[in-house]
Length: 270
Image 1 (tube, rainbow, N blue to C red):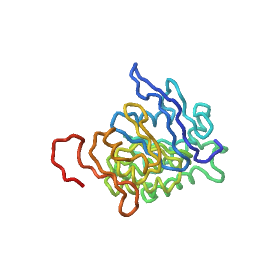
Image 2 (image 1 turned 180 degrees about the vertical axis):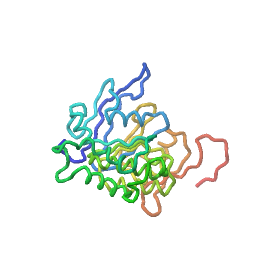
Image 3 (image 1 turned 45 degrees about the vertical axis):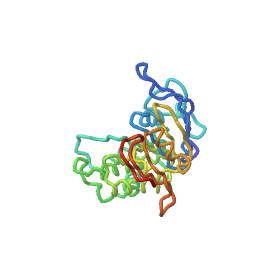
Image 4 (image 1 turned 135 degrees about the vertical axis):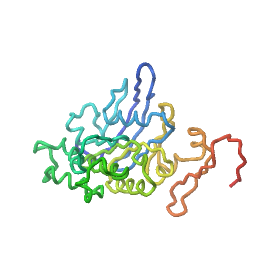
């Protein structure tokens, strides 16, 4: 990969399991060095699309490109140095320390020539810890960490890979509001091409530059967050009665939930 933090493109990608279509002719893009959010109801295909981007599943047809390079044409080790995936459930029963888990991210760089210029494995670990703001946790044991600390540890492991592309599956799942905002601030600060499956619409509105909306394994629409996130979309895709207004401080879209569409309750008109 010659292009740092390339655009990721998915072209006409279809994937089925046991005859059931999971992803249906999906085409979308994640702009370079921007945060792209994958949104849609549960079961819409967000995790499956991330898995396809990460080469964890082999699609029936279509392809994923990193810049101009088909993902399948990139050597396995080179791909591991290019793309980092933070999955939703990262658990271990072993008594590993935070530092040891972050060190796992350096595996693709072992072997001298493969390391970024001037950096040893210890430097990569230190960089990952610092970028995730958890240097003070390096000797803590994984099983004793809070949910937010565990997620930051997985993010530090991903940063230690020195990836060009960061893929995340619901990074704020099970985190409180403060921990969620901290984590998303760290992700944005890194400036990588980032694709994150998200279920919290207001966090997606705050942090994503680009949105891809999935429903029943298909892309309904995609584009800049301000254009995509509308009351009509939320009604059509989620069945929600919602207002989308400019945030009074940032001007970014803000979702005000009123209920589900068609709910038999009396609501005050805005």
